[in-house]
Length: 170
Image (tube, rainbow, N blue to C red; front, side):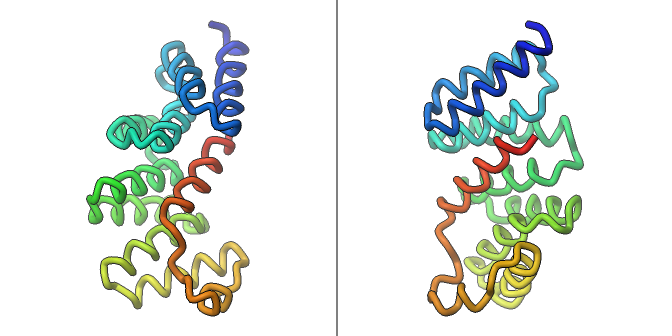
C-alpha cells in the first residue's frame, strides 16, 4: 500500500466513523496499522471506535500503542485516561489526565475530564479549579453549568465528543 493509499484508507475510516459505520472504520484503521505499524492516529482512532463499541480492553491496548508512539501527545493520554476511568481504574485515569495537562496546559478537555472525575472522588475544590480552567480555556460560561444544576455532564457524552474530535484531529 502506498502512502497515498494509506492516507486514503485512513480518511475512509474517519468518514465511516463519522457516519456511524463503526465496524467498517475499525477495519480501515486496522488496514492502515497493518501497512504502517507506527501510525499513531490509526491506533488512536481505532481506540475511539473500539470505545464506541464498548470494546474497552481493545481500546486500552490501542491507546497504549498511541502513547508509546508519541509519548508527548496530550490527546493520547486523555483518551487513555477516559478508558481507565471506564474500567474503574480512577488513579490511572487521573494520572493520564495529569500527563495530558502537563504536555498541553491549554487542552481544555483534559481539565474537564479530570474535574468530573475528581468531583466523583470527593475532591470538590480541585474539581472546581479544573472546571474554572476548562471554562477559561474554552470560553464556556461557568454560571451556565451552575444555573442548569448540571455542573458534571454525562461522561458518555464527553467521551463521544472527545473521541470524535480526536479522530478528526490530524
